[in-house]
Amino acid sequence: MYSLEGKQLIGSQAIEAKGEPIHAVNPATGETLEPGYKAGSKAEVERACELAWVAFDSYRETGLEARATFLETIAEEIEALGDALIERAMQESGLPQARLEGERGRTCGQLRLFASVVRAGEWLDVRHDPALPDREPMPRVDLRQRHIALGPVAVFGASNFPLAFSVAGGDTASALAAGCPVVVKAHSAHPGTSELVGRALQKAVARCELPEGVFSLLFGSGREVGQGLVSDARIKAVGFTGSRSGGTALMKTAQARPEPIPVYAEMSSINPVFLLPEALKARGKELGEAFVGSLTMGAGQFCTNPGLVIAVKGEALDGFVEAAAEAVKGAGAQTMLTPGIHDAYTQGVNTLGGSDKAREVARGPQGDGPNQCQAGLFVAKASDFLNDEALQAEVFGSTSLVVECADLDEVKALAEGLEGQLTATLQMDDGDIDSARGLLPILERRAGRVMANGWPTGVEVCHAMVHGGPYPATSDSRTTSVGSAAIHRFLRPVCYQNLPDALLPQALKDGNPLNVSRLVDGKRDR
Image (cartoon, rainbow, N blue to C red; front, side, top):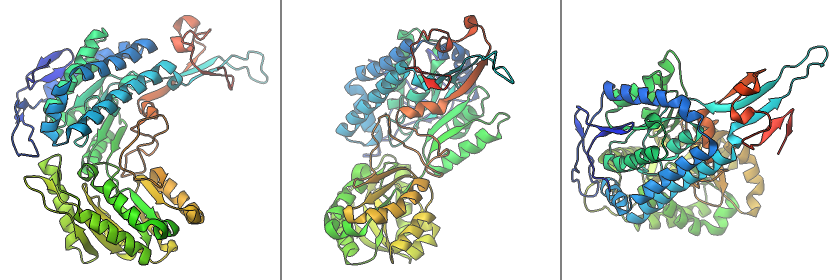
């Protein structure tokens, strides 16, 4: 078992940096945790990027089976950490044991999902247009296409998922699956958890006899380490989950480079829920209670938390609000992930409470101890919501705003006025089909995932999932950060014209030695 050393993990080495130490804080107690992690500098960034670049050409051409086995080995090594990983993550996040054990399962599950994706080889998107020397009026040359890895990827660990969106989370798993070495900047809220997972990944690299630069883990400030990574010419893409301000700062840095690179940033979303009339009339009380269950899950610290409810004003909506208010009043306070997140949440709630355009209808009980999330529910008119940016801002935690609309036309107008979202939810019955049909095109333009009769909190890791959406939900609405399609963020197509078979990569050779699906002269060959 690993003992925490507070060192940078660069390639196969553990290196002590020289910067100011970073300490995790137990948000439930306020206790400062040891060890301190001395912040890295330009020197550590330089070394990690150098090793990643040296490893790139070798790693991107690893065989499908070897790369899939590597991803499975990472999962095995994470599982081998046992209770030590869960205990440290509990100390650093304040999250309960069951939640973290589930998150570990998700982390290892998505690594194994990408292993299966790699083995299948469909991500290569092999295409072959054979030569047509006798074609008139112009012959056609032999053309073949595959996808290759973009290059080394910088991944930023997220605060709200210390395992599933962190060191070995979805961005890392999909980048490694694509054939990209990864340099992770650990989140300062959970450095010990990050070190444990980083050492597991380091061990997997060694077990699979891969180049050491396939993985590195850095600790340090956003400016020196984070911006330094994004600025480094050897980094070819970025994966980020966090605040809008943090994501946009990285986007600006990436675009200011002599060679701009893509930043796949998941940032800000209030995940509107539309209560359509028939569903609201038939089951408003039940919807109100279920809504608060979704809102308060994990102290509301989910990217897909339902921060906005939209419905037509009337008795049915009043019944929903009354039921939701009672549920909020009974929702116990929960520890938030970090003091910073708690401070931002408090500020957001105070902004709503101080607005003359939002009416507070319920607050949950105050908790004992530091960094407690007190649930809240507010109501506003649609006209006020559309004309006040403060009401539209994300409040990251267990507080939501109900918006009253005059009619369904105003519901549609409000939907049109929303920013880009990760999710949009329709609570509907059979009698709401026509109303939903009118909303659906708007929601398709506004969100990456549209759902009916569920709640957005939580994201299934599977092939069909989309965790993305128009800005500011993400920086690139064409992609997803969850699900097997996430691999495509870190790939690009290359065409090979008239190359002899001896020079062609395995995926493109005659005879299809990898036995992968190919599009040959416009027809699928298997």
